[in-house]
Length: 271
Image 1 (cartoon, rainbow, N blue to C red):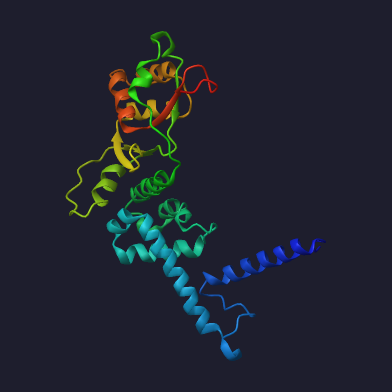
Image 2 (cartoon, helix red, strand yellow):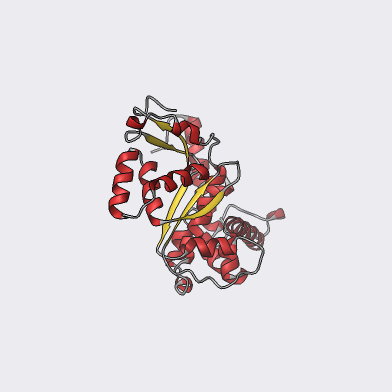
C-alpha cells in the first residue's frame, strides 16, 4: 500500500533506496546495486568496490579513533581485522560518526579471536564511556561548600544529582589499570593488578578524568547516581563494607566532580 501524500511517498522511496544501497555497501559478497552505473554506461562493479572499501576503511578508522587503548593492546592488524567484522555486522545508524561504535565492546566480547583477552571488552567499554563523557552536556560541579551548608538533620535525606558527564563502570578484571596504561605514549610496563576494578569517569574542568575507585566508594556513588538518599546509601554501603570511610568517600567524589548539585527536599528543591 503506497502513501497517499506524494511527499511521504517520495520520502519512503528514498528510505527504501538508502537501505537497499547500504545493505550492499558493507557486504563484499553482494554485487553493486543494479541501478548504479559507471560513466558511459559501463559496469559499476569495480568502482562500487572501491567506494565500498573506502567506506569500510573510514569506519575502521573511526573505531580506531574511539578505541586507541584497544588498538594499542591488540596491535593494528588484529584491531583492523576485528573492526572489519564489526563494521560488516553493525553498520552505522547515525550520521554523527562519533556515535558509531557503541556496540563494539559487546562485539569484542563475542569475537572468538579475542577470547585470550577476556578483559578487552571492558577496556573498550571504558573508552566508549570516555567519549560519551567528553560529549556530555556542560554543567557546573557540586562545590563542597554547598554540601557543607546543608543542616546536619537534613543530610540523611539529601539526594545527589549526577553530573551529565559522570560514568561509573564495573569490571571483573583490572580493566582500569589496563586502560590507563595503554592510553599514554610511554611504554607499558608489567601490570600486576588482578582484582576486579571500578572506573569513575568525570569532567570537572572540561577535561575527562578517569580514576579507579574502591568497591565500597563505587557502591555508594552508584546508589547516589540512582537517586538514593545519602543516609540510605551510606547505611547500605556500611552494611556491606564495615570499614567504609564515609567522609573520605564524599570528599573523593566531590573532588572528582561526579555530581552537579543536591536536592534536599526532592526534585523540586534542587541546589
